[in-house]
Image (tube, rainbow, N blue to C red):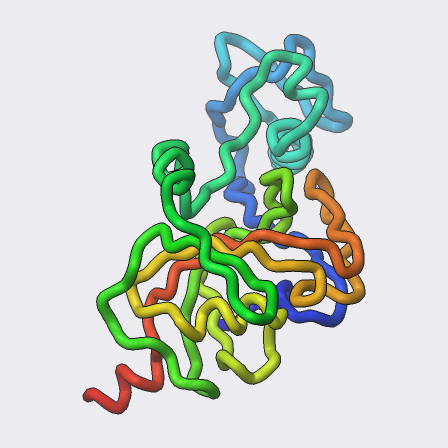
Length: 227
């Protein structure tokens, strides 16, 4: 299923999944991290002891789940309380970042720049074919504003057809399946109208440069032809 958050028109709205389970029918005992002592949820009795929460009413689970989610996802309150922020998955980890410093930069006629994290061994996508890719989209400071890894699904779109920003289109066309690449997209090839920020995410100003880490996973059309 294709995401629409990378389209050049419109605004980004985060849709990060939350894995809280709601207990139905009968009360259950739930183990969770203690955020602070003496948590009081209206209409629910909660006993906090050694990280275990005894929840008497089901709506207590709902209130606690929403509270924990808002506190643990890059919340200033969580950081000030000494709680570690949730780690954002990336295509290029710390060791990759160090290796990338020694990779030569390629600059195209359009002004797009890129570095190959890994050169793929499969075919390159023809214009108009669907491709399946993972991506992590960042502002120049490295802050992530969108990511297929967090959605836990590859992003499928028709390459070279204007379904995504120009810099991403151009950058993927010259990749090979199995490859990973960092794209330095100038403002002229990025989001002409910008993107509004989701909670905890940076805003993308109109015509501002952005960075994409991209991995080309497969090309559905070519796979079908080969079969």
